[in-house]
Image 1 (cartoon, rainbow, N blue to C red):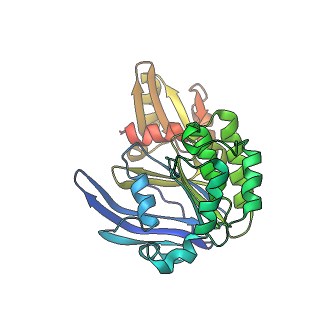
Image 2 (cartoon, rainbow, N blue to C red):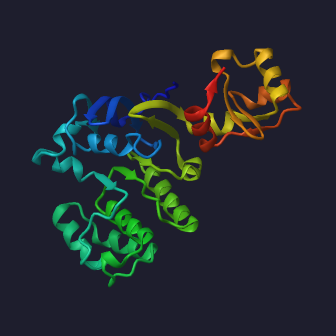
Image 3 (cartoon, rainbow, N blue to C red):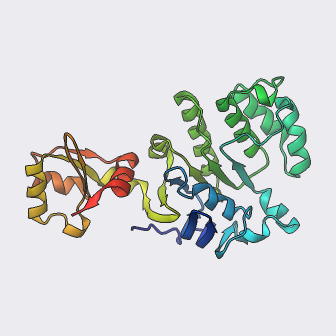
Length: 303
């Protein structure tokens, strides 16, 4: 398990040993941080613990152990009246639309204006135009993608310093996803801001994430810089003879030789694809994607 560090900048989110037990599932000592200026991708299979972690950080569930903090304040206090000021600085989008279905898009602003003293109606109208959201349409009649756009417009219209997004790009077509990613880049470019973003669409994280944190069965499996995965690592596409030659060479220590067998051959996790290419020029070695790294880490074996 590898961990990146976020201690060199102001930490906006900190999870320290988050533990929560349910029947059939436990969140077990989840620890990571999100620093100012970062977009952190939070990945894992369905049921791995992503949403539970996010709810714990927002103070929506009571922990059995550990602690979380958001913008320097204990997560447990966010659900109390004294946490209202902090919550105004956090924009949250869950994977479902959390607004009354009978409201028209234009009427949603009235609800948020009552909830957030920092509500910016002009910004909201600007996002409606940017996302091409019909103001006179009822929330219940919006497609999933349009509903996610509306949720994002709301999250971005009350002066948030921090965005926490749970599958916010789900249901969007590729062009709309790129539009949202551009918006997130603009958001995090401003001083004092950060984004925690869970997503099953790892190609989005390839484009925007600074770090990737993976959770599986309630435990953090890895926490790595995206550039380390995508710019330095590689996937060697091996035949059996190639695999045995790589193992025998010692270029990758046995305890680090992670591989995944397929009907057509063996994929090998290569820590440094440039050094590997010098030693094994005859073996194809592709650039690693986050999806590749997830598959090798979660499904691969170690020699």
